[in-house]
Length: 202
Image 1: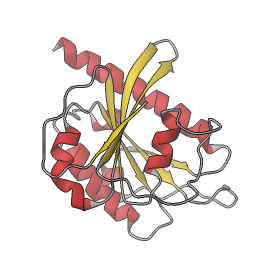
Image 2 (image 1 turned 90 degrees about the horizontal axis):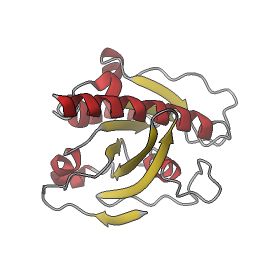
Image 3 (image 1 turned 45 degrees about the vertical axis):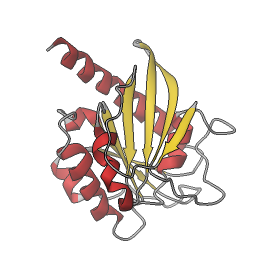
Image 4 (image 1 turned 90 degrees about the vertical axis):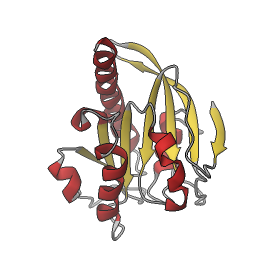
């Protein structure tokens, strides 16, 4: 299920989700929407697909789905696919509300993305009071745009993410990346769920 795209003109309160809320952020054109669609089960053949054409997200898209985590049952989930366009910055405070985790997506083959993703980290993770444990509540995908992984090397971890000890996983539109994204996302979601459960007891 996909909620209508919201184009924030001013910062507004967002209602608390009934389940978990995961924000996906990063530079424009880095693959956030493709990854969001795949994780929410919105692709045609259940795999991570390269888009035929690039369509910029306007504001934020909210995708609702459920994930079955091994040994932890089924989790209701909202995935917030956030535009990489800074013209929507006025809506960022509302987007950050009630977040249980943040996924950073950047293209390591595109000049400047490694620097820009550090700025997104500062804004949505470091300066977000909801993210009390960045190592557990933040994951980064170094998402390559090519459709094969021949000759691909592990990406250099961006400086700010390295200092914060944020896990960075190389992905792409190759056949093996679907499994890599799924496994890392489900592990990440389980960690976010544990942090949320601890907060609820405090």
